[in-house]
Length: 604
Image (cartoon, rainbow, N blue to C red; front, side, top):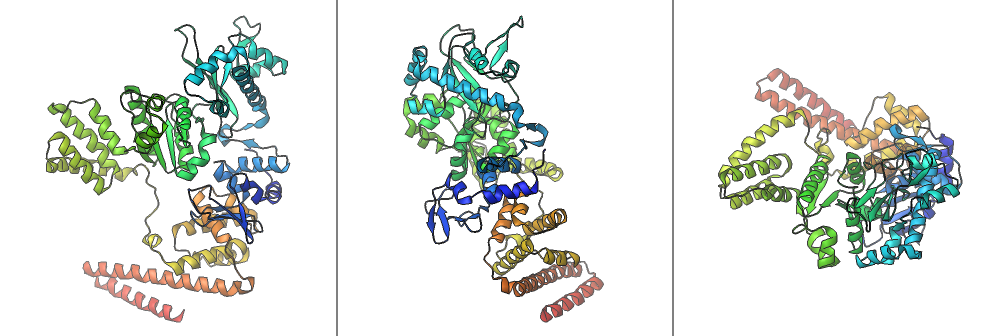
């Protein structure tokens, strides 16, 4: 990936007014020195989101989100660092010749610029044909009968492709687009004899497909009339700018609402998302067909804790919901499934029962993952047959052994007993046997959603004084390279909590590379959003420079004492274990060490 020079990054940061930038996303009101508004990263009714014009930083007192202009774009747009810098450079008039995208997929932007421009032209052309021409009237009337308003048609850029072999191709030629590129982009197809090109989409209602930044990168065309042999929907092929495993329909529109609500609704198809939007559901996205990928889920997990899956009510819809739910669980997401009655799809339900019923009875009333698994397992079984009962119990317990808390286990085991007339005790015995088998597997690999972080009981205790000392010491380390060098030379990692230790290690690498303090650049270099938040919260602490040395000494003193106390606790535990093992020599040795440590405490 092309590296952006550090001086260019600094120029972009310094020329970007954070108040103007955030004001494009949040309505800000000035109170005192700072500006306040509703946080764009979580739902709230009272403004707790503060933007400092002096420091060019933001902080939310509700959810703790903090950062500068670059990290704001990274978080709000779900963008990597380079892409965020390039976007801000465009706002400030700074030219950057950089690469956008994953390193493994990076391509110079200009290579695909013509493809994106051609898609924008095509989208405008199709929209004009639908809304402003006689040729588009039939398609427009069809959409209006389906409940589409002009506002929704314009919002989603819906259009109409003429039943003409070269309508778009001729336009592209007139605009001097390279037709080989247009073929690669999926808009035109070369004739068999190689003498020219013709339109891929003809006589179809056109639905633009957009990337995360709102650029049109493909189309899905729905047939209005014609031969039954023609596919109902025709989608753009995979191209350099359109990959099904990357694109989520409506992601660019839904992203802010997903962040605020903390949940995302996932549909099977883009028509479901458009119908749901008309019903007032504004935090939904859709996959193209049933091609949900790990990349899709990673993208969603970055902006939402909870995912509600809503697929059609037919057999294919149930299978898709099961597949989506399993994949999301493996990614550690909080999964729920909204079920539709009969064989209805979301559009059918909204048409028959209305948008309010869809929101309240379907989307706002989803099944938990285990409740869905039970419903899924039961669908194909007749519980009056013994084999089906045994199979049903086995399938449910198999999931139950992997996923749930003791309370949930008790709840679902009792439900199984009621449904199958098998005693709770018998099901519990079967569960214990199955759970033991799963436990053996768990030793080899962590369960979905678990981390490999070592448990640290200190991390979970609320030690206000210690937390304050850690934050203040981090503030000084971020601004004082000499202090960091002194602590590192003495091989002192005074931090108690794991996150602060991880930051200390990363800060060592940062000083080795850059040499001088720059908390902005350090925060921007961190991929872990939680660690970045801790860094920027510490950087925003108001301090008196004249009291800096006294404050540093107090922090070090407090943390040294606390670590000695932890060491004493550990040695006392070890001593008790030694006494149990009748290792009196080791117990006596530990007792002496504890006495010495306690003496050290009194001298600090």
